[in-house]
Image (cartoon, rainbow, N blue to C red):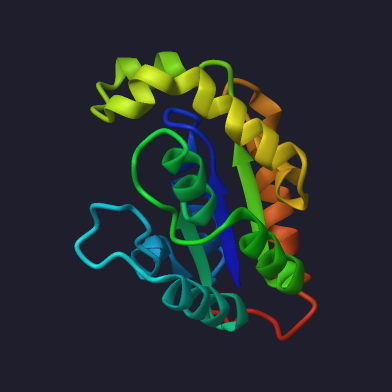
Length: 186
């Protein structure tokens, strides 16, 4: 199964991914915290996936009940960031939404969103020129996509103390109560 993180630069995706990975590992679950390596969608990735490879890898991870795959960015980020550069996304929004509709019980999307994201991104010295120049617009595109689809059901805002507890509880419920086979413990 997949726990999938989306949001603009500086929104806390990596921080949340690490917290969830540690929590699940401490509870004995098998976790792959670098699962986005199976779906490199960035246009400058050495081996960027094709659309067919993307869905094959996502389906394989989603249906694997022995491991919780943590994906830090994927097709939604590829779609959002391609709005602001000259590259073509690996897939379309509608194809990804169709995939999500057919695999919803095996994928838990989390939308990382905070009003402090742009400040955090600049403080840590990010070098993505598109993210630096267009952060507000990128956030608006994420808001549209994540608010108008089933993807935005679970949100994380690192500026709110209760947000991490809420997300950890939801992830644990998702992993434990998965409607298919239980995740095998290590």
